Length: 424
Image: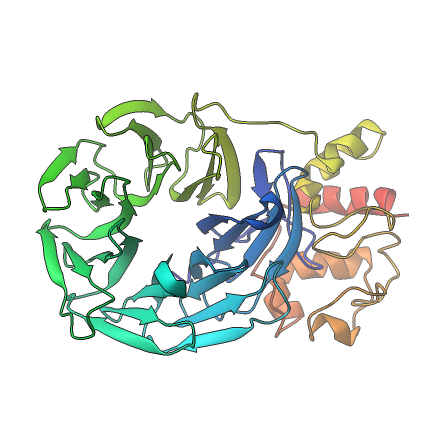
């Protein structure tokens, strides 16, 4: 879970956008996705310890939340707006609508990574951990611990009857009744292999999938029907709002759409090509979001499987204005979070106008992290090159930025040329 991937961005703060359907702001695989009720926004969470709030229309990262001390594995909506995030550090953060510098409340109790969250009835929040427990959090922040799994619990889903389902490494699907304080949990199905993902269907059934690549539809009574999805482990499932389509993502890089209730393959998405860690349908059911190992959040038309977009990123527009084309291409990873001019409006990172000769952490009004706010580095071609050669964790120890370097000398030189031209 702690695998740190090397990526491109102007490491002064954050990375960014490649195309309208490809939101590139994470420094590691995208582990969780959550469409938000407020303003049609999207939240994504990654192995880089970050949660990013997106405006999907513009492709801009509106806010980047770097609070957790480990990979962020799960997101869930909160009643009245906002969301919860659960992470490798064992903590659950409760965020207000739009995010904030720090969460409103922190729920602690898990002794191992939090792998899943699920919003339940009456304001309850369920969490699953690698400490073999499920916890039911009441609105007042107190929790009830549900023990029964013999190993890490990887997935949760609330059934239509108000019971909570959990699936884990022990291969069992269990049901919990939040109304019964002494409920020891019922084994609904023993599937024999580790289960990674779980989704509730409108008819009370559950879809479960795991290590062997098979999707299993489990009826309310426990009858199991197998869907032969392939041999690569399935790590994420999502059900369309109308319950008529199931999306399954695999470590092999495929995303398959299944027609329900027939359990018939509908379409495979063409293009991810990397392990896909997360899937989510938009509230209208017409759009499917995926997040993968390539650090991108991608958007697809659910009915046809066609990728949506593209929209020319700012860096490509700059290249057409006669700036260094190679450097403009390298800069694409930063274009959604860093503007080249001071009048581009609020973005997740500070603008880069007159970057060279500027002291670190000096753009007025931008909420820098404590480390960057010290301002003890002046950005020059040499210091920017050093940042991306040794990495921000070495050059600015204590920063919340993910480990990022530019490994190819030609790419780094091109990026520096572009920045010297474009930020004057």
